[in-house]
Image 1 (cartoon, helix red, strand yellow):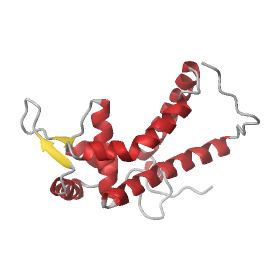
Image 2 (tube, one colour):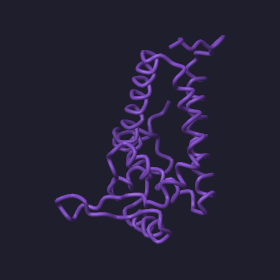
Image 3 (spheres, one colour):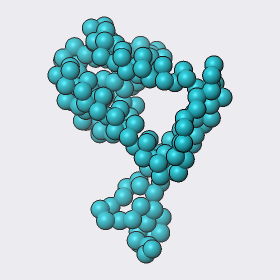
Image 4 (tube, helix red, strand yellow):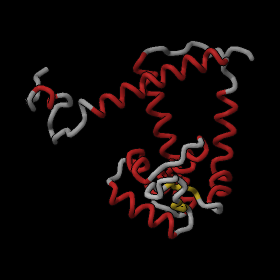
Length: 180
């Protein structure tokens, strides 16, 4: 596999973070267009995409885990799942020996639709990724994992229970807003 080289790469951290934000915005736009294509609200389509992705990874979601992934309360997630189930996109199953545990599955009808919509996306991104060596991909994966871990930590600590106007991290200082 030939090593991918880009002429005059801008390695400033600001540029890299800007490119990551652009990728995130583009991913959100794909989800929004998937929603429009299926005739769903964007939040419903984002939930459906999470369910499909989890199934593809072999780790189907529970309603509680879906709620965490899409940032909705359990009540709002229940209403969302009711809509997706009524539309025939999602099925709730009790596959675990503990029958209280609910597993979310995409319906047999929606998977081919999702594959049709996301097929070009998957093919093009796969082709782009294949241009890099295994060593480069491992390094990039490590980088992305560290960024994700940092963001998870920030959300769990500095930005957890943040009050309007409060500086992130101030709750660890007795609620005071530190001055710069």
